[in-house]
Length: 236
Image (cartoon, rainbow, N blue to C red):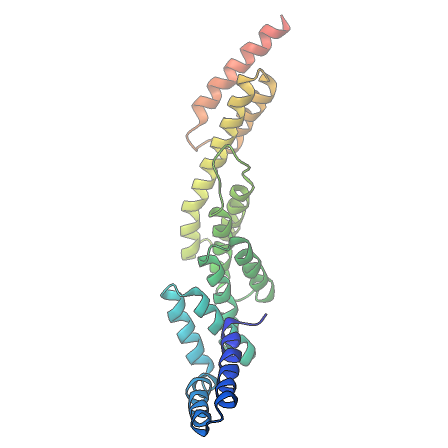
């Protein structure tokens, strides 16, 4: 992929030579060389450390496209630098902060696959969970993202229980479980209202078994009682 940085370089090269040949003026050529040295010479001389530091600063400042260009530049120019691996991870971060969650998830997945023992893996798993968590919809919609977020948070807590990201994941995990319990309650109510009492009771029973401490326990029990009454009457 051609970065925005490379495109801007090509544009400036074209502009310099266009000015020279269209005017036939040596002063323009001198200006062109000066501009080339000022822009390209400085960029080419940047070390991996300078690129990663500038990229971090751009990321922190919310300039995600510029940060992405710098991380790409570092990876392309210095693939064996000790900062190249961090650049891979920060590229995933730029996608996440630009709310491109599916692309960010793919980037975090790739990072975890390529660097399974990297010390940043707890953060990577947490971010994978957050990519799903940020896409959770209302309880009347499909809850695939909720379930996948919960899976990532559980995996993080199991593998790194004392890590600071595991502590953060616990809070988000509880929210996921509450949402899933509310979803089961929502579907159960729908089945009950439409007269599908067995299906409704199955949903409420599933809720009690899997989400007993999320705040919906008593309501689910009451609906189970009502469902049993309706089913008994239908068999009489």
